[in-house]
Image (cartoon, rainbow, N blue to C red; front, side, top):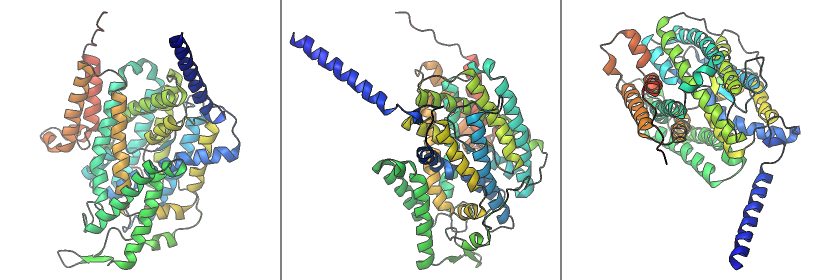
Length: 486
């Protein structure tokens, strides 16, 4: 009798716990189409903007730097324009993803932004084309063509979906993260082109930013925890400003030439920027070059796979169900055509943001109106160049303190996707071979030096493309393991 009574109490406690858990996720904010008051929607939307704001601008800073168009160059003003456009486009494409225009947009709780996944390929293209504004123009032309190509893939996604299980999408995401870690570390040291690269000042500044982010992320809750990266960046600016007061801002190189240290803030650039400006259409002349188009088109296949993984993850984590074929197809189409639209404004490809997928999974907030308020905030930011100028003078070491963590989190996301399915011998082989070849080639691109230039451009550089290619091919060729009969 006592045993029966104890079991009844335990059952009652479990039911009560389920009810309380359900109450925590009951309300308009936890429903995609729920009606939410503006005063509640705005902070929930800004939460997403804070989570992706820095990541949305980081690729622009990295690639313009690789093309010799960064701060301190004759193209410094153009970089401000591109940063301004990046915020505008992220907001517009997010709204399209949330509300859809015909088949374009999945109507899923996804935030769109400038993709970090293309950094490795674009770095390789910029190097092969000799850098400069012509190289950036070739990247933009390739992005327009590649975006249209991904849009076509989106229309054909239903029959192709079986080729992209979690083990493939996870391997692709993991390889993207691994390829970006070196980029983050270079920024941490002040930028590998800086004459004071690896100096104590640069390393200390990057370390301070990283420590602040970690402490806020895991030592606090609510908005402070969610916006830890943005707060860490702000602290980095403040520390850099103080360093400029108490430490020498110039140095002398081996040839006796004086230079400004990489961590110094160029406030003149902010003062010269206007308060309001209409975003420029086609700020960079397009350059048609197959050496850029081929590897970028293949990268768009890779990012389509990543988007399928992001949408699947956000629907399972935020709405407790699998994504439909229509949602996946619309999401990928928006991914592709949104990237083409971005390139028209001189912005790098726009894709789904994995950081925000994690935020949705954690908070369960999927309300479309809440997310759209964040998108509108991004559009407004795109109309004020002074804000873009403030971002553009960010020291590379400050950026690196955040980038190392952001890029490493992509690695973790890839691992989580891979382990969604049992790690069978077949899956281990797919991951091992894809990462072994992909990451190995990315770390030692010289192995392809005897092959045709087209092969080097497609498979060299970052290692993302060979990893994705091997994962897809092995998933098709390797026989699936039969389940053991009980």
